[in-house]
Image 1: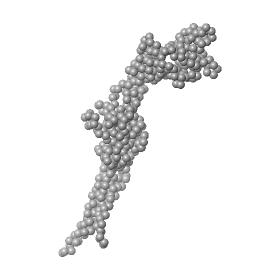
Image 2: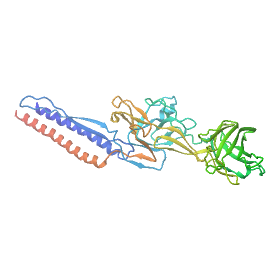
Image 3: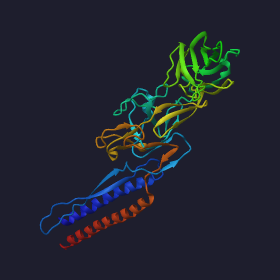
Image 4: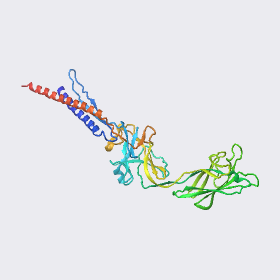
Length: 433
């Protein structure tokens, strides 16, 4: 009976608009929730085949979904580990409960933003119990290769705020001038020496001593010096001895002309490096290439170390942690050193709206979303990671209030249909009287 179908259609309309009202209510309630993704309700008509001269109302059905691919605006904060994703991709997180069990089984969840701070155990987690996940770096700050299609390599990011850090010296540059007058036959032949500090593998300060002795000819000038290198950690041991010859031509006067090796590792003419083995390992010392005035030179009558550089640092205390746009977690130390300790990849799936929404603005992969892949932030289809930032709710309150008015009117209209059908059925009942 068409009147009955009209009643059913009205009831379906009430139910559909009630579902739409629920999504609007959820959106408005979470208008200030960081990282919230708007829910939407779509109506679909139902058509029931009718005979000639009659029509049966099919009513309406409603489907709801979470628009996870919609992003809210970013807002700046004062916390370095407040993170947001600018563009496609999500941060990998896990639950505080699984980390507490410590059995190595940490389920992978995804979120687009979070305010992460260290807890009592140093884990970066939010107040809602989400722990940031990342790949651990090696002790020297380099990243090994991890699988990209599984979360097995990911670990909870744990910051040791009492951590010490240092860097051994592996390279030096000797930019200095030797007095040309000292290689003449009338000079005294006094040795020139220089002590350069370096840091060993334990961050302890040691010294490399470099001694320059001129070659005194019977007449004229030799333009030749013998360079002897020793290590304070190995008393009495010569770790390198080289004979340096300098040009006296008009175009290249005072620059290196030849380097002969008496003991130690040879001279690399292409790079200007020699390698000496101190107690903690090898150090490359750059003395300049042939014809170059930036390394060791022999000019005028002054002994002048003008450019002595080296890498390495002593042991220092960690002072802060920051995450850069590529997802690398940097630990900063009070000696000016910073070291990569983790890399936070971005998780991407073919269909973000197919993810399973969970509490605390987190999501989980599903058959509808497709398999996930772990990208370097800023690589492939993914965006970058923004520190000192949070993503605001994707709710447009003005738009939701407009839909609220429309939903209220639609609900009232469907209620009017039911009231009308009731009155018509009452009229039908009155025919018998």
